[in-house]
Length: 316
Image (cartoon, helix red, strand yellow):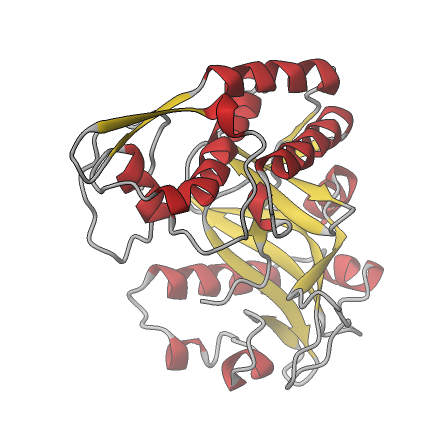
């Protein structure tokens, strides 16, 4: 299923050529977190919903160039695309029925021009049978579809995901929930220094081809530079659990992932009094939505392996 709203890990904001460059980027994220309201990240089934002029009804549209999304998934064609016994079928059916039967939804549609502009959509996340609204967005132009132009090939752009907008929407749509918002309020320069101290104490142990352990002190590689290359998260976990031999040519990408988890846990465990496991924030410089999570997800469609206890929490 395509991601119409793409939350980026910090290391995905830009191509990184050095560890020091990445640390500077993280310092800027700390500044944003310390001075802005941060939104809780809701995990669940994403359902982008827009108005269809053709059918005069709300439809689910995942933003692809498939005819399914161009037409929109509505209550009368839903069974053509999904089996009635599946969770996705029931989730789509439920949100469309809720909107159809909501008396105040027309006010929201008129106020935010949803009935006139089919490229605007509301994003709902279904979690434990609750409907969370995360914001109002504009779909971006593709080869086959109209939309707002993006020179960065974004699939969508935020119009409004503020606490004020979400609470206003909640007053109109009485069946929805909204994510929590947090004011973390801290001295970001002081906390950045504390984070660097954490980095300087970090030691990593890998398995070599000679089956001997190799020890790396992270502080010795802060000035490491290398060209960006693909490095799978699954491989990161295998290396940290000493299930594979470590190749030093992967060191830069490994450290980027490892520093990401160190940073995320530093923020979420130490600076976040609400102890949320994941948050999202907007980096206005890159126009990206950045997510901080306590661990990475591994593709659940692949065969899962029981890993030894890693240095940081793992979730599958």
